[in-house]
Amino acid sequence: MARLQDKVTVVTGAANGLGQAIARRLGQEGARLALLDIDEPGLQALAAELRASGTEVTTCSGDVTEEAVVQQAFARIQAELGPVDVLVNNVGGSRNARIWEMSAADWDFTLRLNLRPTFLCTRAVLPAMMARRSGSIVCMSSGSREGTPWTAAHSGGAAYAAAKAGIHGFIRDVALEVSALGVRINAVAPGPIETDKTRAVFAEMNATLEHSPDRMVPMRRIGQPREIADAVLFLASDEASYVTGVTLDVAGGR
Ligand SMILES: NC(=O)c1ccc[n+]([C@@H]2O[C@H](COP(=O)([O-])OP(=O)(O)OC[C@H]3O[C@@H](n4cnc5c(N)ncnc54)[C@H](O)[C@@H]3O)[C@@H](O)[C@H]2O)c1
Image 1 (spheres, rainbow, N blue to C red):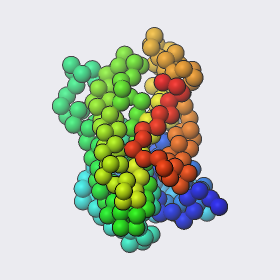
Image 2: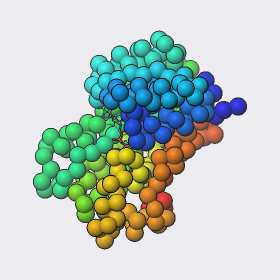
Image 3: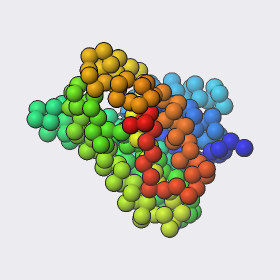
């Protein structure tokens, strides 16, 4: 029996990077996927690939920081697929700058992109999860929630660190609110992970910084998206049935 057989599973930010790897991994385990992203061509390409391998996929394109977009997407998902069993709040990102040079616009962008979709999507799925006394939510924090030497040295990541610490606080509190109602919520905190977007940046950091990822990560390597997807799968599945309110570091020992 696959680990998420027939579970209605939403992944945000699924068109690229870690979200793509998460969608592939959960699809392999029998999930019925609803993928959300602002990148419509990327969504369609992934959906075609997954359907070709036998996975059921629905796509919703739009900006998940927008309340109306999220409300419409979840209304459609629940009408088409039924109540959501698993939500992966993966969307996130950063506009980095030294804190003394950071614009308020970049600060707001980073806080909004990491926190608002997590709040809006969680709020959208919880009533049905609580009514059925079943559901698992996995959010995306980061090792950066405690500061990251290479990011600090390279460009400055305080807004991102604040946002990802915010995700940890969010899952801790929501777990207290919903644990007795049968819903679990956890986070994964990746270290530096190689994606199409990060590959060149990490290579430059390794070549130029004293406190580089390849020196500061005890395992002495960048992680792979599949390693994050496997941790998300564990927390999403019934194998983690007594795990809630946890931020799981998947960061090579940092
Ligand atoms: N890659 C890493 O090293 C790393 C490390 C720690 C944490 N993370 C976290 O993991 C998550 C995924 O990171 P990634 O590296 O795959 O990022 P990414 O930028 O490669 O992918 C993000 C996805 O989200 C989509 N997206 C962006 N803004 C959106 C919006 N407003 N509405 C809908 N979709 C939107 C993008 O189109 C893209 O498909 C993020 O939360 C990130 O902060 C990544």
